[in-house]
Image (cartoon, rainbow, N blue to C red; front, side, top):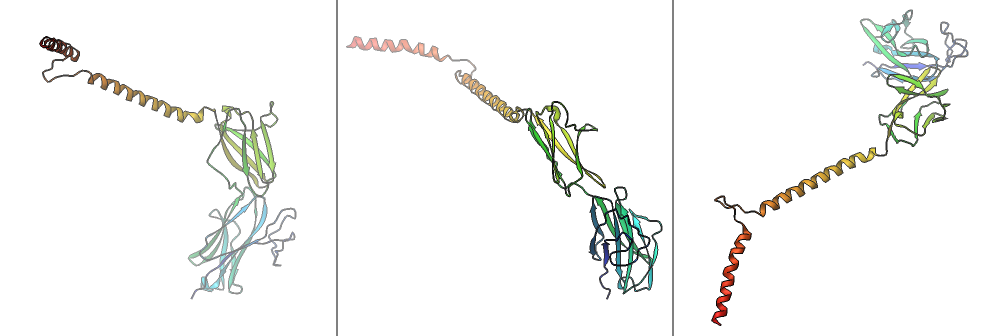
Length: 305
């Protein structure tokens, strides 16, 4: 039975003299004493295909992969190399000798803002290659939202951005169509105020006008490069929230007017009767014709008495 193959990504803490933390020699992996070095150990199961590593400053990293011999047929040696974004890295192909029933492939990389990407170790086992990928990417803001901040003319608005760890500094920009202009907090009269508290930055805009409606960009500056976030601001007049209610009010008034108009027309039609032969009968005139006959009957009764 084949045992479960294991690939290990090891970010080893290296000494300035180019010797790994475990004491093994790494003569071709010199490290700048002033450059930060990280320490991290991760074990990836056979079914895992990618390890994600987020960084915010340039550093040296040791990437290390280990595969059990039972997974590749137990040869005495096999070839291996490294790729970046799918392309083989020059001068990284080596012959790997089996040690303690394992094959170990290790390489140190200097990672900065221009060398981010997908690094992979490749073990060449005849016609079948065994690959493990390590995605190294820059820090990004996690609290992005598509909902705009809504405020009103004449009031103030506070725009907020958060990111960890704390950046070196913050910068704010306003996007005008396709152009991005840096916000000047020294404008007169002062309408903009910025405040940085740990990993949070706030931009306060006072005395809002309709032209302040726009997208604002917060820029967290790190040694590896800037990290960008966006906040959308909508400035409304105080009448804006009333517009839906005014529309409903107009519709109600119009509906009432139509109902009253229909009732008036119905009353007019009911006051005039139309017989089958098409001639109009005036009810008032019928009453007048009936009045004399009633008078004659009264006179006849008096005579009899």
